[in-house]
Amino acid sequence: MTNVNLETLKPGETGTIAAVHTDRALLHRLAALGFRIGKRVEVIRLGRFSGPLHVRIGATDIMLRRKEAQKIEVQPLAR
Image 1 (cartoon, one colour):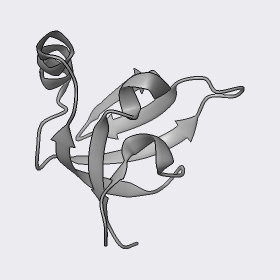
Image 2: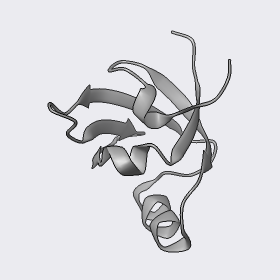
Image 3: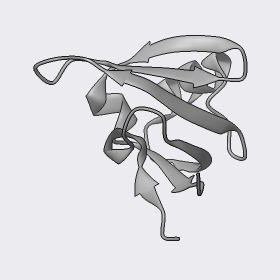
Image 4: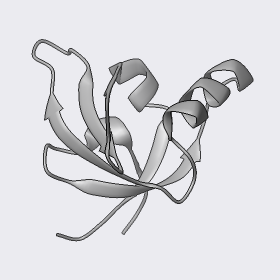
């Protein structure tokens, strides 16, 4: 499968983080939250009216702005 950005995954879909395309400050902030290359991320739900994404990395649930989710490249995993 080809890589997509995290924002394109639907609730219940998972992917492995392949890259994070952002500036250094946001990269460090996302890394501190667990967004590291090779980690599995699952989309739990999407906020209404272009609201934030509710994602899960391991046992941690995070609300992430769509603008930031667009910068995270993931490789979707088959169900």
